[in-house]
Image 1 (cartoon, rainbow, N blue to C red):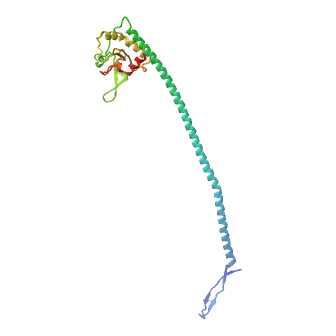
Image 2: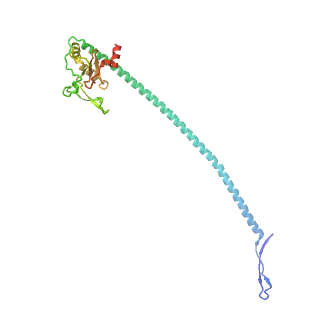
Image 3: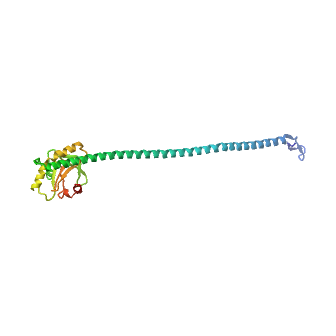
Length: 263
């Protein structure tokens, strides 16, 4: 067993050359110091092991949590993407069905309107033929294209239209003055109004406005312009309006050739 002893000597007063040793004192046993050092070392090793075990336990616990979190995030993302794809597919499907339904509805409306217009056209053509072949032709007032060029000569009910427009020199839409009580008569270039056959047909067609009005009143928004053109170069149109160019000839229009070819 080791001992730790501390001591020192002092100079004798009688003989300076003689040193007088003082009684040594025992401070502590060496075994106690060793034990203390050992305890400290063991404690340090114990703390290190505990820390390592704690860290290991934390790692063991955290890694699965992280894995679960990452997996949940990945699963949630895949689920969100799948739901978004399903929602997109559903929206596309619904949109297609809505468009198809809308197109089918518009198709039925267009077919109905086409039948109405074809029926109205047949009535108008039949009435015009009857007037042209009538033994006692009517004698109603006629308003020519030139009459609509002057406010003093056009029909009294002539007003700017809310449906009919013409572009001006600046490219802006301007309402066309129209008359719903009268038609307009236009003669192609070179056609003489005083020629007997022309004058006779003009008188016969003077009763067309009431035929035009009857058809238009069935659906005012469906009928834009109504007109009748003869091979002699006579052209009537309803509602009455002006603005025909000087070189206009209905007999040169595609619709005239198509109607003539169809018989």
